[in-house]
Length: 135
Image (cartoon, rainbow, N blue to C red; front, side, top):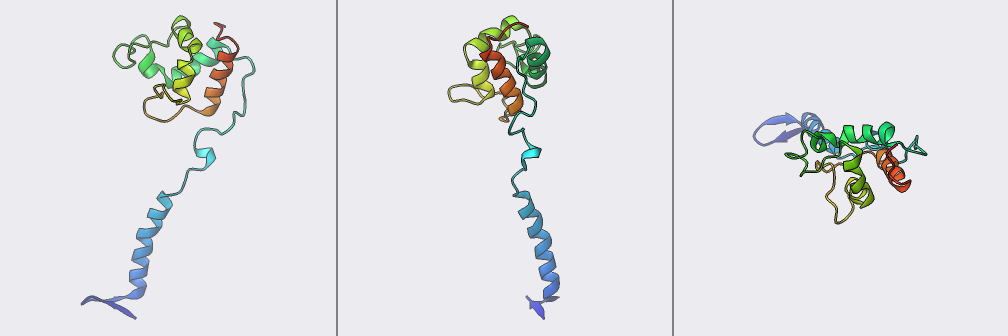
């Protein structure tokens, strides 16, 4: 059997061409699997998070690009999160958690729109709820 628009192209060739175009399009619409994104649950929650041992590494990884001593004026709207004395007020007034949890009335951070991993958020929240101590 042939498909005809003035050309004699076998129907099997047309079907193969259509499938090679359709399959990649359908595949690109797949939702990411949980293991590809942020963890749904925190596999290793930290019971008593320490600012220096647990919170600073999270801030270094996700926040210091804009909010360190060097870049905070230019990129971080003047917010420096590199020292405990700078982080503490944002932990206490709720803006640190509000921003990283993308809560209403808070500027979602990081600005690229993707939240930091849930486990990191949970550990920061645990630290804040335990008094946001400089430990």
